[in-house]
Length: 277
Image 1 (cartoon, rainbow, N blue to C red):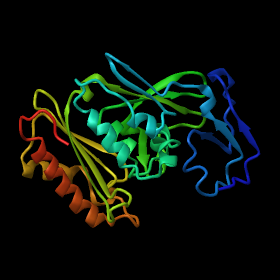
Image 2: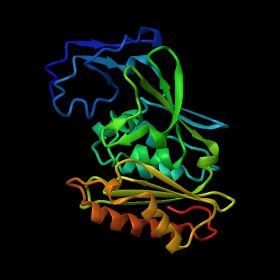
Image 3: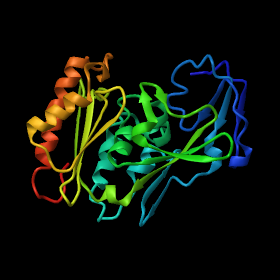
Image 4: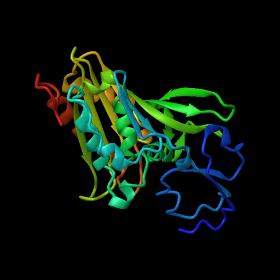
C-alpha cells in the first residue's frame, strides 16, 4: 500500500534523535499493518529500526524483548530448560497466522500497540505478567503491565509522543506450568478466543482470556477452582458487553467457547504432571 499522504520518513539512530511528536506522526517498526491499508492522517513516519535495539536478552531475572523483536526472532529463541513455560512462546507465535514474510517483519511491540483482540503477543505478555517499558516524550520512562496496556480494540495506553521500548517477562512466570487453547471459525482464521492457564509450584492458578474479549483479562486464583467456581468468576468478570463482536465471531459464540476452553484448561492443569500444553 502506498501511503500517499506521507511527506517525511525519519530514521533516528538514538533516543536523542527522536523528533518532537506532532500530529500526523506514526512509529514504524515492522509496518505489516501500517502498509496494509490507507493511512490518510499520517504525514510523517518515525522508523524505529535504526535505533538498533537487540531483539532479546536472557538473564536470571527473566526475558526482555525489544518492541522491535520480530515474531520470527521470538520463535527462534532458545530458552533455558528450567523455564517450563517456554513452549507457550512458540504456541503464541503460531497463533499469528501469516506468511514467512509477515513473521520476519511483524514485531512483538507492533502486535501490542495495534491492540487487536486477537493479538497473540498480547495473550503471551498478559499470561506471563510482562511489564511494558515506555519512553515518554519528555525523556522519562514509565512502566505499565501488559494487562493494562491494551484498553480496547485498536486503542492502547500510549500517550502522544510515547514509544513502547520493551517487554520484560519475570523468570518466575516462565517457570509455571501452562495450558494453551485457541479456536477460530475456520482452520486458518483469526482467533475467536485464545485462553492461557498457568499454575505455579504452590498451586496458584491464573487464567488469561484474550481474543474473545475487547481487552485482555487475567483472572487469579489462590488454588485451582472447581468448574462451578471458575464459571462464576468468568461470568462476573466478563459482562456481555465485554465480549468482542466482529466477523470472526459473535458475542454469544465467543462466550460459549470461552467457557468451554476455560474448563479444558482447568482440567489440563488439575494434575501434578510437569507441563501441559
